View 1 (cartoon, rainbow, N blue to C red):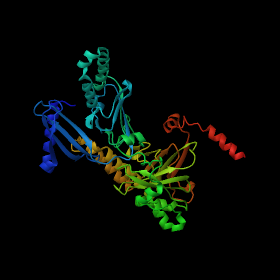
View 2: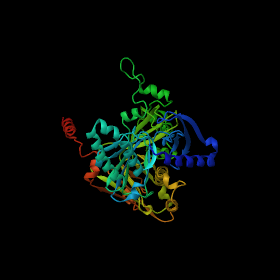
View 3: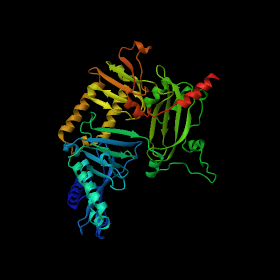
View 4: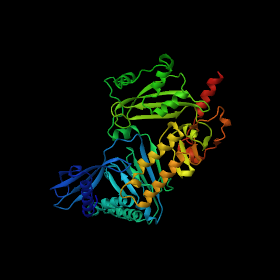
Length: 494
């Protein structure tokens, strides 16, 4: 917990800001028990929004009897579709890195691998702090019970004292270390000082939650089972409850109805792109769980062949309970032996309308904007060149909301304004620019403007050998398919 002096300032500022913004009704006060002295104190609650980030509830407690005070942040918005993991490299002696703002939710875990140190979710509640503040708070909490430890277990207390010396040295910038923030709920964040450009010291990755993580967040993992152990609902039952369409071939209901079934829950631009390449394959369904509210819903998917590209699997899901919609495109078939780098030189407004498929393994770069999108961000999407850039910029504004708030330095605001102006020039094609999609799995695609892809002089496609690091990140170095290859070859020769 933070000290009471700091908390007093936080509560005063919070109260005055709430009254000036929305009146007394914006700030809620409730009487609550003080855990230090047992008397009643006051907890103040404020529902607010961090600009372009998340809806949050700020809570501040103050006890007038013992001057105990603390504050915490809880998230009032939806659960994010994927978990997030931020990794910040903190060099020695660079104290400005320690001042980066950190949003930690109730479900986030903080790790420092160099010390084999981990702060579990239950150890620190949701907080809005800095890297240094998070470390020093851990030091204070470990130090709080040292007197009792010295009486009960002097050897352990001495080991903790030695560990605290190392931890304090990290908090003061005397040693280099790695700060890892892992949140299955996807509601945590580390400030990027170089936004919207990539930060050489900060990396972010997004992942699908495991069943254990889903259960820890309070959501149903498996459907309820009956006495025989069989699920009480099958796919058709869930489909019917969710108001979905039954599984039917495209041709039996007509091309228009089939395409509408495929695009159920997708934005209009995705539907238009899919309809251009659809073939009479069969739409299939499977029961799934909504990534926002955890309710049962249906995911529709089908496999199709895109000309000049490969076989792909289109997946779309929508939740009738909360309205959440999601669409993804997954590559089908075998993993290519080489990666693919696509370079598109945009010269006219028509180039902005080219269809684009970006897989979840693709990195995107726009050199003229100094914009770089790491692998895994945004997932797999089907859109246009213009739509891809707009989606990236919307994601940047949503994630890097601290650069747009009232407390932001003027030079940071000016940097964002300059970025927006440069973006407007590119989207209006006032000058040519370049889009680069680098996909280690060769699962991305940009539509050519000519009948033959070789005749498109603005589109350059290069194949390259993946590095060992790329194979390691994709899990290919540990993949052994020799048994399957032998079985396949045996079957083929018979």
